[in-house]
Amino acid sequence: MSKEKQKSPKGPLNGVRVVDLTAVVMGPYSTQIMADMGADVIKIEPPGGDIMRNVSVGPEPGMSGVFVNLNRGKKSVVLDLRTQSGKMTLRTLIEKADVFIHSMRAKAIAKLGFSYDEVAEINPAIIYTNCYGYRRGGPDADRPAYDDTIQAESGVASVQQSVTGEPGYVGSVIADKICGLTAVYATMMALFHRERTGDGQEVEVSMFETMAAFMLAEHANGAMFDPPLGPAAYPRAVAPNRRPLKTSDGYVSALIYNDKQWNAFVAAVQPEWATGPKFATLEQRARHIDNVYALLGKTFVERTTQEWLQLLQSLEIPAAAINSLDDLFDNPQLNAVGFFETVDSPTGRIRFPGVPTGFSQTPGSVAGPAPRLGAHTREVMDELGLTDDRE
Image (cartoon, rainbow, N blue to C red; front, side, top):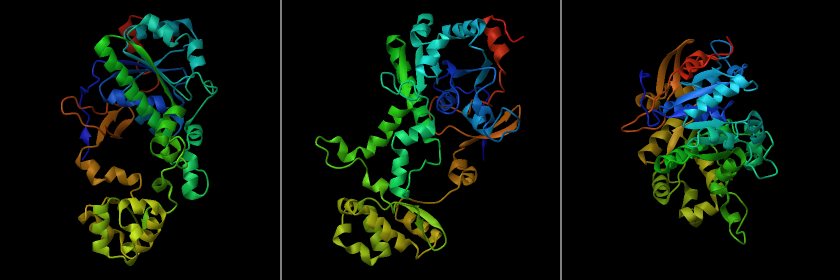
């Protein structure tokens, strides 16, 4: 059962105003989370709109599914920042904002007249978050970047080669979304510091450096020691035989990891190969992990998916069926916790994937439908006491 969106969500960011100059995925995903947590997000769009408005199927032009989900609950204000009137309106918005976030390269935002120094002169307490490809100070600072670019440069595509035999992208815009999450937590840390000190500051979130840190969290491994103790890679994650296990009628995901789980599995299934000394402890299995996966693969074909799931779950070994993306919309766990939220929008009812986190005092919720292009321009102009120069 989906739950109806509350009329007045009061999340932990209630009262925070965000001026959002982001587009595509990274920045909008970040500000979508802020909106769901109660922030008043004003999305500034050029006259042609965010390019994501037309990248996938939608109920009407300019309202693609990707855009509608990433920009739900925001206010769309159309400003032509090439004009003085557009710049003036943005400066007025900045005066009363808590956060200014953009996804332009440093030179581009500076050319418009909205670098950090220029914005901080208008509002010294503002949190100014940059979202772009590469950190300033390096030779790549002014290069453009998309998710595929960063997957290639940060090692994601190379890790896929270790597993499949050739470089490949993950089937999700993982770099954009991880960097969007990073922009959320970095902005919130800066807001927390401001709450304690009153000081605003500039925040820099770059895709390449963020994904390099993300990939090297486990993959730095032996390469981070001086002298190196081995190559950069976490062996279990790149083992060629690490894949869903084929059963007699399908596939199952199972990770028989620690010694308690391993011993319970061996006692219940009694595979002859599992009694050798190289499988006795987690440390020994880790040294031969690809061999372990290969032997498990030969064992799992002997039973059905359901038989394995029942057995492994009874042993408290993490195991799951292989869901498709469409399966998620009918998932018993997601439906039981009210994960999906149904919202009425100008284009019809929408069943949104909802807020994944819980708060006992200030829960967030889907902030509302995504806006048509410029839907809130007049409303915001009236609030600021300005005239919509498009009229």
